[in-house]
Amino acid sequence: MIAEGMNVPLEKVYGVATFYAQFALSPKGEYDISVCLGTACYVKGAGDVFDKLKEMLGIDADECTADGKYSLSACRCIGACGLAPVLTVNSDVYGNLTADDVPGILEKYGK
Ligand code: FES
Image (cartoon, rainbow, N blue to C red; front, side, top):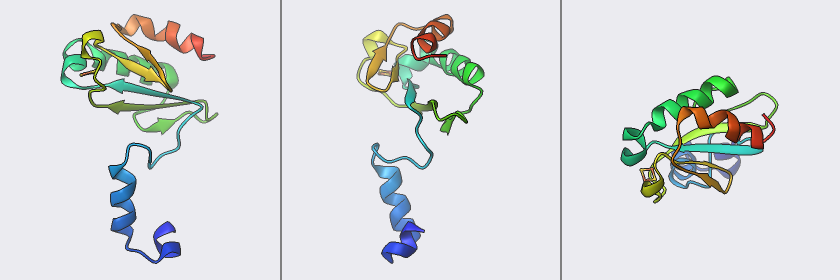
């Protein structure tokens, strides 16, 4: 659609949309949750944190809940390795996490 409207090749639009972190191919929720799966976070259990979020929100990576409230994605190192594992909810940062911390964090955002 955009490619047709702008009369540029689809691959050019896709390249720009996937290059810049500010753009996304899926809708973002009111609360955009991003779990760092960089090396330091991953070896300290970020995968378990990510799985717990998927289970509690009922969505997979790069998806948004049906009510538009939460979206979930994985990211690479955000430069807070000393706090690994780390996640962000919009601009809020949470560190030194375990999967058991997930319910308390979601509760702060109305879950
Ligand atoms: S690897 Fe997660 S903050 Fe650096």
